Image 1 (cartoon, rainbow over the protein chains, first blue to last red):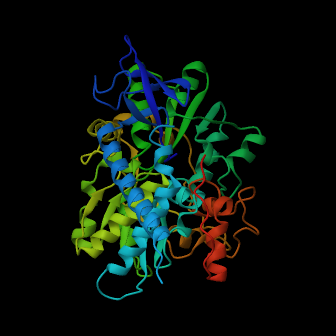
Image 2: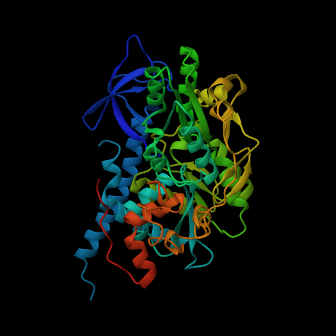
Image 3: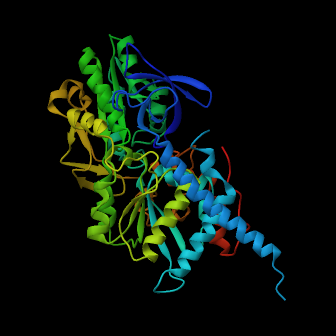
Length: 90
Length: 388
């Protein structure tokens, strides 16, 4: 219940602006977007879905920043490992 | 899946874990000191066990599971009330699947269903409203459970029912609020914590500001966290970095989803349809004032507690059940006397063994590594982080 699912907005309803069609892992479903501001999301945007409602628009820039931090840590570790493997302390 | 798989990379997890171990050693004060962080949300508990995160963390970092599993905190008396409503004539009771196996003093929804009551699982309260529309000669009740994460969806459904005049729809409201539960934990004398991994999806609704009293008044940091393994490891890293740098504040690891000010529309929908109850009973935590929601007077016509005869009797937990201690983080799941013997996901005695977000069920299904670690207190090979 607490676990939301990310989905990509495919289409926003014309007569029903509170409804959107989203793609979740290749499956298309209608969800309610009435908890987001009108016009906040359109096709190509990602939203976090909870019990049939989009709770939040996923901020791509923030996601990218988080990934960069994580990849940075991963890289530092890879560098450290490579350095360790190369070292020959006697 | 985007925004999921990239936050599960095993190599990055190992790198983060070694950073966490380094940070622990660098914190001024007592070397070798143990740090305890509570993850408040049941979704986090699920991730921690599913991906064996505890085995990636150094022995000096312990994650304590908190009261944030909405199914787990529902007391037996409320389950009895729900079943009493479901058993009344011409009623269709609807709820999330997690509730179906939660035991009340007279059995579960599943057993009541088998005995002839019409109880249906729904994915969304909107599904419940649809059932009401399709069955005008029945009274359709939605048992609303959950923290601020699910309360807005119940609120939006109520607003719609009122707008469309669907008068055979009602809500049995069991929505609870997170801040009073955290306060109860902070006031609990038997738990020493160094900080909180803050709930992610509750915070999409309430934002990060409501937690500011925790560093200010209690001197403990909180980091709002996402639900993937790397999110949780990064949150632990952020908590330790605060301790290392002598800071104590609210930070937001999950900024891709959680806006600092929350979701004003969702808060408005809740405020329009619901108000705080004077008090509410929580399993394990007892009665907590202003900790749950009930429907506003303007929505009385939709309030199942007013429409139906509800027993409202307080029922004590079975003697053997130690869900209370598990929910407060005082006991680890396997330390409960009936864990895995009398109490299993198939035949649960307590709620923590029912929901996938419950600490006992999560541990029972995924937790073998940590238990081995505790038993033998020896280093085990690091298990790889699983993929769904």
